[in-house]
Length: 363
Image: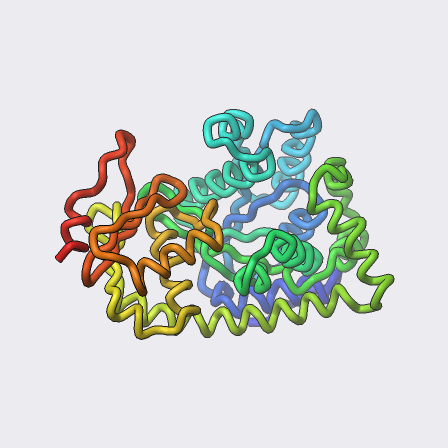
């Protein structure tokens, strides 16, 4: 169903409509939870979804996450409250303790804020039984994310960047996962600002977005302008390379899913994954890598903290590991090798191994 009320910002709203239609969220009464910080991107996303909701027949809910890290955060929440009241959109403001999470988990401020934000979004989506979470990432965010990933030494997944629709990187304790939508991923930051000007919206500005202490800001304000001076269109070239990488990754993951079903079994208590060594040895190393990533994610909810070396160690155990050998992995996991299988194991708070899974590997 095509939208009919696109008098303002038609290109941006049309792009959002295409993204929603592609994901099957148009015309079926879907319930969308929108993460809105009050900044330009999320404000433009919310405004465009308000433009579309009647014609496209979906239900909107908003969550604003207050990280409590800036004196202006109360003003951000108040701004989002005014928008939602004006547009008759239900809102829940979630306040999270980033400092405490950072202390307990030993995370950076940025990672602790990201973890707290995603957890709040997932909890809110579960409470609402939302069909998807919509976030305001733009094409500029995509290019910055890809460059940051490359600077950190990422492989194909890092080059692929963010998908227009993807699984949440974190899960709730009950294993709940909700699709994350990024309807503005085909829209530039300049397009967003033009749309906001047309709508006469004045979003909040986060002064920390100019702080050179944050690596992303240096990529945005230093690296990207330098790349454009060296070669005009360099940013667009990064975006095209990312699109090609995502296509390759999607194909790889489709093939890896078949291998996962054939080679892997999650135990009933979800504390270990048993992997058939014979089946895995016959697969390409790239497929084995994706399957191992899935095994780690099934136990931890993400692959955060796992390095290229960790994956090499796991792959070596699959292909040439000695029976009864074990190695420790990050985040409280252990790898145990049997004659026919290996097990990626959780370890409980007292450090005891999961005996039942170990027995399976040693047959």
